[in-house]
Image (spheres, rainbow, N blue to C red):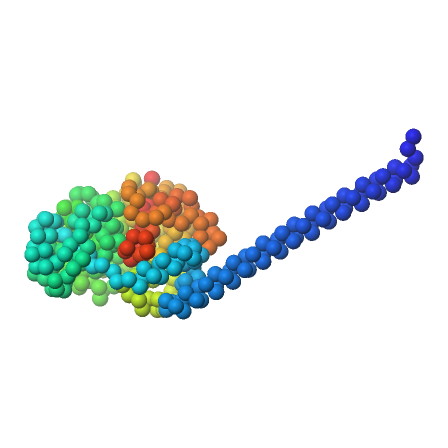
Length: 364
């Protein structure tokens, strides 16, 4: 029979062992947290150091390269920076409202131009060799083609407007995408072109005339006020004003001309424009949000905040894989899973400028 003192000793020993075990577990977990914090500190410190070196080598502001490493990784960042040093091949879009693709190709080749068909755009060509300035040819002045980047051409292709649609281009000037939309509509339907900057309107009007566009209505207003027009559209293009971070390949000054505060300034405007556009869609209508920026703050983070707060809109899958999937997590922030349906174009992967596309559908 066990005595009371023996029972007390057994209980005391058990309690002591339990306390020791708990203390050991707490210390172990604390050490794990310290190790992880140290790893994070080392990781951030390493990213900052890598970014500083690459920024100095390629002439960027360090904050830009640091962000690239965070969402692209070091290897792809290096490839991106190298690609941005390469000249961009000029490209043209044939205006099939005025001339066939084959006829224009034959005309330009007879003049000494060397053209290469663009896979993504049936009426688009890369200009491998220029006989003379593309903007001074008789064919250009007659509106037979538009000088347009390949990524920009995809905007109208993805939105895919049809004849008799009501289509709105919320930020239309100078008209590259607007004239492409009209072309795909066969100059039918209604194309509402909006731009708030009156100084850009003359260039838009000139391009509309040159390309022979007759189905457009031009409005010099702020597209944020679009819902006040009480017009509902089948298709809306929002090529949102942005920092142009994807344009470095054609404008190297952007390596140092845009600060983080510029991105922070643009994002609220982009969100207001996106809300206005979505509120002007018909039931089953679609809006294409796009920018010539690779900054997540101007792309996925904008779409995520707006769409996440709305019940009747969904991010739709783009019919073809032109680019890589959009980001669903960035800078430690988890985003809508459907953002994988959006697409990104990068200079080092797609041989274009940097670009972003996201197709959003009204389910109401």
